[in-house]
Image (tube, rainbow, N blue to C red; front, side):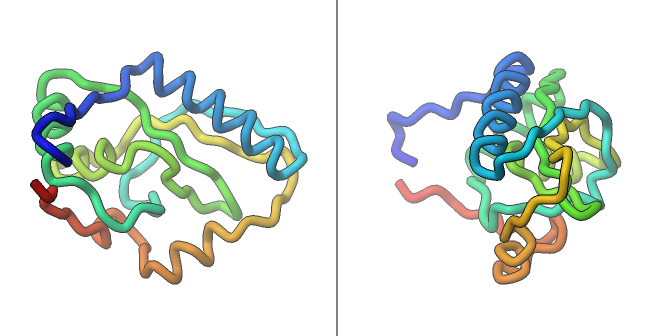
Length: 139
């Protein structure tokens, strides 16, 4: 990230818009209808799909959460597992701050789908938020 780049956090409204967009995209990709469920999930059952997080963005998210930042994360429910699609920084920050749950927008296919998401996270050795590496931004 360069000095000129600004970190912009997603709002609650944008999170809901993004979840609706991801729902439509997944329906097109998999050819099945999805629903969006809205509930709190334990942070320790979430499986990340992103190996690295920006330290600079994480520091901002940590501060914003302390001041009430509350945009939900977006997850895909697949074979009774919950994969983070959007909101890795938020979920990681909440865990580091001692929270046990996070508000989620859960994309659920109405019928079984074939996806490689589980293979991808296994290859990346991602099992929990603790497996994520925080990286310094290059200047």
